[in-house]
Every structure is written in C-alpha cells, then in structure tokens.
Length: 327
Image (tube, rainbow, N blue to C red; front, side):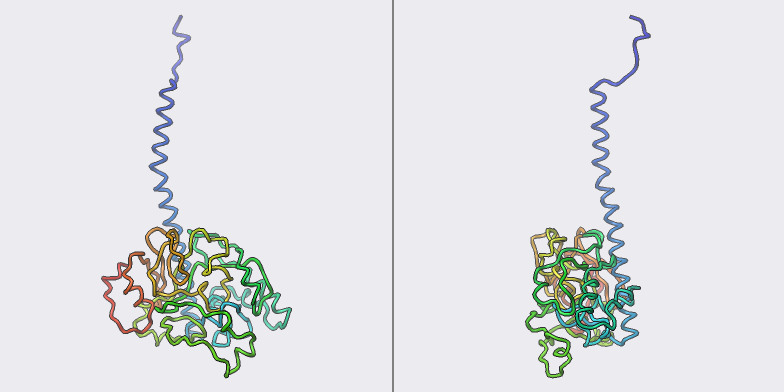
C-alpha cells in the first residue's frame, strides 16, 4: 500500500471530543447570553416606567394633580369626562394623551349609548407596548375574565383586552380595590352628590379611588415615595386572564389590575405567592419602581418590609436613611 491512499482525517473519538468541547463552550456561553438579553429587557422595562412617570408629571403640571384611579374595576375610561373625579377610567386611561396616544383616548368622543359602548370596547382591546414588561410578555391583547361579562359599564362585552404589567401606588394599606357592588351603576349615579362612595381614608398612596393627590401632598419627599411600579403576577397566569390581579383591561378604574400596595413585601412571579396587592416582577432578584420625582430605581425583593411600606406612604413623616434603601 502506498502513501497515496493515506489521507488525513478525524477518528470517531476525535470527533466526539470536538463535539464535547463545543457543547461545553455553548453551556458556558448560554448563561452569559441569557443574562445579556435580560439586562436589555430590564433596561427597556425601566424606560417604560420612565415614560409613564414623565407622562404623570406632565399631567400633574397641566391639571394640578396626579391622575386618578377612577371609579372601580367595572368601569372603563370615558373620553368626555376629563381626568378628575368625574372620570370613571383609571390612571392609564388618563395618561394616554401624554404618551402620544391621543387617538386612542378620542375613541368614542361625542358618541352616546350603544355606539359609544362599541367604540370603547375597541379601546379596551388595544395593547400599548409601554405598559408591558418585555421580560414578562408581549404587548398583545390577552383573554380576560368572564367576570367582565357581568358588569362592563361603558363598554360592550369583549373577550380580549390590553393588559398592564405596571401599577400605581395606592398606599401602605392592605387593600387596593373596592368591591364591584359598591360601584355606581350609572354615570348619573356616580355624579350624584348624594351617592355614598366607599371610604378610602385609609389609603396613603398617590393613586386610588377618585383620588386627586397633588405633589404638595407628598410630604415625605417625591424621591422617597413610590409613584408606579411593576406588579407581581404568578408566572402561570401571564396569558390566562384568570389571575384576579390581571383579569380585566388596563383601562379600568380602581382595582388590583392597575394599582398595588406596599403593605406586603414585593415578590417574584416565580414564587408560590399569588397576592394581587403586591408589587413584584418577572426579573431575577428585584423589580423596577418609578418615584414621584420621575426617577426610576431598581428595588431588591429583599428590601426591608418596613422601608417598603414607608415608601408607599406619601406622608407618614418617617425619615428614611438613603443608605438603607440599597438603590
């Protein structure tokens, strides 16, 4: 046999070694790639909150108070009723013109009756990317609870809706919604000075049922008071519509879909916790919060519960040491 028949090549063992090395390298690189992607998503989430916070401050400058959370969960926004206590829709609906979404806010303007309900049903189904955290889910319309069929004031019945991953700070109390049966059942009833609205005197935040909080009322300092933040949501319910804190549209009035409290510590989506009044996120280790000065900060899940409650209270007059915040 001559050397003409001897050609260089890999043996099976050498090939397996090369494949193993490639596999090890990929295993080493994958966490780094995933971490880089999550860093990008977290930055986008922070940018979302920054846009929302600046929109809130623009509204406060124009209207004299922070946006209201509206009347109750069974209501949606009305384009003909401003941003004060007459507005049944929540803070997200109030912010639309300040987020270059005036066309959405104008749906149904000047209409009445069934025609208006149909137009507002279209609004309910519109997702807006600035209200969805890219780590958690895409900005698309998701299924909503069947409860919506029982009492959809101002909107015709729908099965899909735009939903939010962010919530306004309602305070350090333990509740962040009002029972639906306490809502007015008509605009006329809600406008009636004799209508008995639920007592929310225990609410210490900046956005809740028919709130009209001015920045001057944030006596603990705008840089030490939560404005908005990511809301906790069980990871199994991102698109199901069955979590009670995420089962209606983001254009509703006051309820735990759009408002959260500081009574309980923030939590990860990937825990067994399913508390619809908590702040939290799908990010590793913590969540993003916007403060009343417009700043956005990263908050660890390990924040001291007492500090978390104090940051949710606009005027408890308890001094907070910045060194204890871990920002």
